[in-house]
Length: 210
Ligand SMILES: C[S@@+](CC[C@H](N)C(=O)[O-])C[C@H]1O[C@@H](n2cnc3c(N)ncnc32)[C@H](O)[C@@H]1O
Image (tube, rainbow, N blue to C red; front, side, top):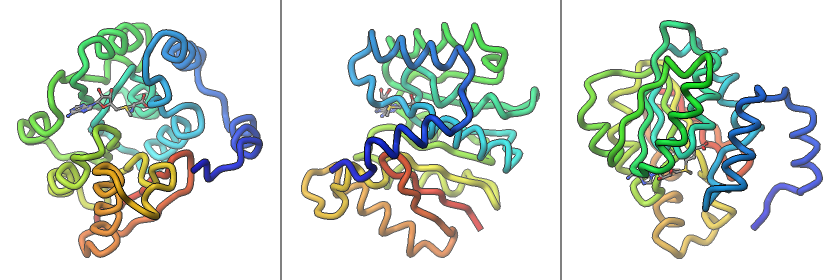
């Protein structure tokens, strides 16, 4: 299901602030050269991530699911110089490409890349975070959530991508549909947080820890 009209999506893109040239180049390179390029968050969600960092003043950020680094660079852009972003992925090839772009960005030095399964990265860190962006394998979303919430600072923000999963959450059938719907159900009844489901792109669940 395409729940956002294509023309409206294009209009929204046109009237959203431009991303830096390097991010535009990264998006284009990913689209031309990488399989599954549609996984990249893109201009509207990337600018939303940057704005959330700017508004919250987040200085410690965790990203689960880096891919070629578009969202990591968008988040890092609004962080102060002493801000730190830990991001992870299991795919060596995408990590190599992301690191090349981080090296070319004035914000790349804020980013640390961890190669390996995100659940390991989560259990190996004792840090707490002001903001977490969750955008990896959907089957593990509930497990990620349970592991992230204790590591989120009070008033911290968890941003979950693909929470509407092309509308498949309406009649969940496949394992992934069920996992995402289950997490949405869990969040709205979790007294530790409050949340808003945004119908941006494939759905973005904004979860604030109380
Ligand atoms: C949707 S993409 C991330 C897109 C990225 N946030 C962006 O805006 O470009 C999901 C990424 O999660 C990674 N991934 C899948 N399973 C993972 C796991 N168990 N641990 C860490 N990363 C994983 C994939 O390799 C893929 O690069």
